Image (cartoon, rainbow, N blue to C red; front, side, top):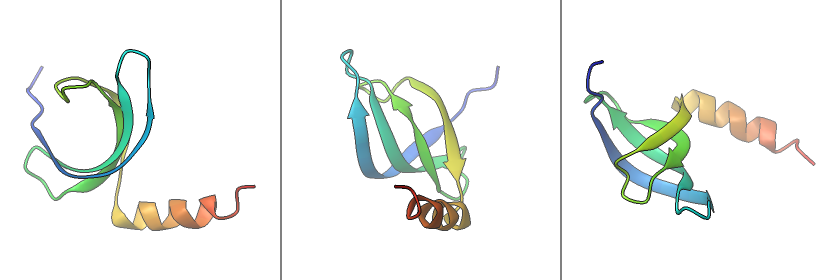
Length: 72
């Protein structure tokens, strides 16, 4: 499997933390040297390991924000 390179450009929010120290974070991440995208996933305390997550473009984030405004 090819090595995945990433750089966390900005931590926007830590949404929760598990008893083992893993955190669910919203970050701006550059994957393999590409343009940074918004990224929501679980991270190990040292950010060396990560769980499955989703990556969102700026347009995706705008649409998600609009959708969440209707959540009660």
